Amino acid sequence: MISRRLFSLLAFLSVLSASGLATARDVTHVMGVTTVPDRPMRVVALTNEATEDLLALGIVPVGAVRSANAAPWFDHIADQLSQTTLVGEELAPELETIAALEPDLILGNKKRHEKIYDQLSAIAPTVFVENVTGQWKANIEVYAEAVGKTQEAEAALADYMRRVDALRAALGERVDEEVGLVRFIAGQNYAYNNDSFSGSILRDIGFARPVAQDKPGLAEPITKERIPELDGDRLLYFSYETGDGLALQEAETWMSDPLWDTMAVARAEHVHGVSDTVWATAGGIMAAHLALDDVERIYGIASTRR
Image (tube, rainbow, N blue to C red):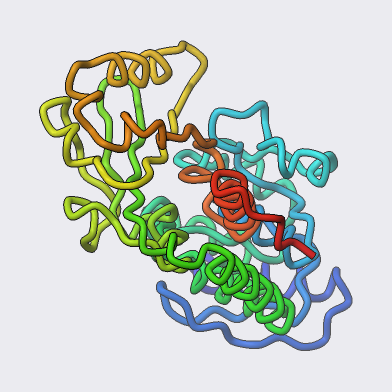
């Protein structure tokens, strides 16, 4: 009987032969070291973040998991994915569909996909990042190394930081404002801290944070009694709406609570609704630019996009 390791090797060599690639290289990632084609041509992305990062690097994945709560892709990437095959949900990739695509590389995430790593690796070389949070800049570097687009990633990150620097300069003293983050989800709401994707954007710009959110970690549950902890100079809120209206209802209920109007940020009308896709769900460099667009809009700053 052929061992799983030998099967993976044979499958990989078959991919190399079929694609005409003569060389390969090793990529070190959170799961170990994986040998990948120098220029993979058929890449499958198992997270929202990986999908949009591939697009930003000039690669259209042959397969990708559904964009959260979309049918099937986020609006800002849908046009580019018209020929991409849906391979299930981010938390439940469809292995048979992935195998049928005959990929030469699979990009995934340890926190979400560790249990199926061996199965994925038996289909094609598989590279994982550890998580999808505020470490998105490190993640795109891993994806870029895996697909042979390191220079493109460096240029993309440099352009993002150029925008951040320009935005910080345009803000002037307003960059010292405390900016809070709250996410409404049916049944449980969350205050977002510095290590979240949205927190990382604010941190890059240089904004201060309300004391209760100015700490490590992704997010923590918050109840109505803790509404005053959201207070600051600005408050951004986003709702993880699944189509039943319950997340939007949560937002309306909180903002009509008497405690809400005790916050100076509410009285100053500095509470701003932003896209959950952009600030929480997508998680990649394209969403990061959309988040900067929002900050420019909120503060009345001319676009820094090129």
